[in-house]
Image (cartoon, rainbow, N blue to C red):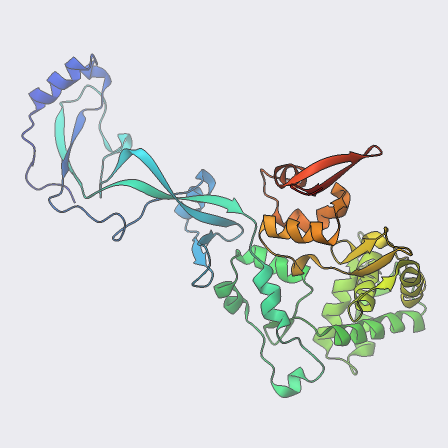
Length: 394
């Protein structure tokens, strides 16, 4: 609070002398001079209070009542989350002194220039050269999938009382904003049962999807126009209605401008799931045999393409014959150097297009895939094609 007794012997005349020495015209200044005095017992700016610099738009949101939350587990690096963004929280230092004052008068609180000069004493309760700063980052969602896949939901889970995670419980442990977390749950095809989040067991998910696709075939639906309500009604006796509805939404898209019940089958999502399902239990396939088997496995009317397995599989065209094996982005290390090390062990050189699905998670607003590879890998040109290889590789 303000000093009750002036701790510095200042008078209005002395302040006017300072103004004159500074070659300022008093008529141009606000009529209040605030005299800074220091508390006899300054706060510990490392323990009692910490200063944090936030972006202007975040400050504006906070002033309107929004909140920021620190999220993660004890050993995690600190992050702060708004409703829709995640920020790394880092320490910073400056050479100037930052003074902490509980109160100070702003121009809007002071009368017009030209009025009789007054003095006010303000108390400095802390001095700091350090502060915390925010740097926007990608949400750290890898733990999300790890938590949910530890015990996937099967056809017996309901009967066995299997508990998943509430959204609040996930927010306590996953370093992401609420909006980003919900987007992450959608991306990993999570489902809700009784307000609990789960990942479906792969075999169970294939069973539900097969029921849905079989119903489309039996109903003579064209895959670019299928009806959700009829599908759910027909299958809910075999699978809980909420799961049929959610699996339908994962693999079918609402038709623009059509009836709200009309959807189209998402060719790429269905084919990607089938391809991953075939690759998962094996150590690899002859590429041509796999492509033939994969196309034969998907429903008539859907078309497979190797690009649909981006981030899920690794093709080795140098082998005779060419091979394919499961090689997933989410199994790679989170460290850029460690991840690139494993990628260059798996394949000596990569084009930007080939490696992008495996490193895009590590990019930032200031470091795209090209910039990341230029910084941590070595470019080379082979027959007019640009590749990247290990920085210290051959």
